[in-house]
Length: 410
Image (cartoon, rainbow, N blue to C red):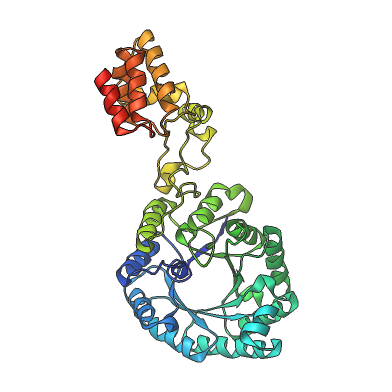
């Protein structure tokens, strides 16, 4: 079983989500949680970006133990120096340097030739290696770069001292097949690759970040760069929780796992959501409110009989719980199971009247609460007119005046 390292960049790429800037205290707290959960590498920030980030990276390096603390730097001496200074108290520091290698970036952003780029990579990786024993090199926009040139760049980076080479799908352009094929190509073409780990950094612009990361692992990558809740630039990054749980659940397919404690996912997700003020979408895999919720009667019946009929992940293993919300799609089994749990008991006739009242009520209100079930049980004992009146009172379209009129009539 291969162990895949988790490189978490929530505090760097994740915080680059518009409006997601965190306080220094939140950043330190989340870094501690990440280390405690078994994340291998925590990218604490980009020290050259601002004095606030530089000080935060320094505090994390000083106080967080148990994980490698990485700092990002462009292939510029001042950036490398800023990263090295911020990491000087780290137990296990890593300088992560990057340079764009795609034609569009070289021509329009850097205005640099391929040969000049090769020279810069060699020079600045060597300089970073002089300042830190652990250096990672990223070829920004690798998936849109010329393969032969990319191989030369990574070969130069390893020769200069990089122990990890990162393959970023910076704009989320690649498909899983393409990224897996690229990793395989690099494994066979980069000189010295046996002395370096292959990492991947995937974005979700086309909705394939996690799939791309997993395809890269299948092709031989041993590190995945990801973020809690999948936050990050534009559409975000591969989600840590999706990558870790997918590898754990499908070990039969990938022959790989991580050291990450998936039981910490729930707390991490909530902490990051609060710190960044970015709500998690309800249907988000693993951490969304509906990730383990079943409203369909067929699904509810299956889960009540045997959880694995509709759940391939045990919710408890990721700090969550199954939910059977009641609504108009719910079936008899789930309705009476919930009624039993809140102490309702019926004879055969009462059971029939209660279920008829529930069906009528559920057509009018999206979600049926326990309080509704108690009220429906009482109303149905008093006859269908009372049950229907309660349903009408609770309908979203019921105006206060109409509700008062019906109450007076009763």
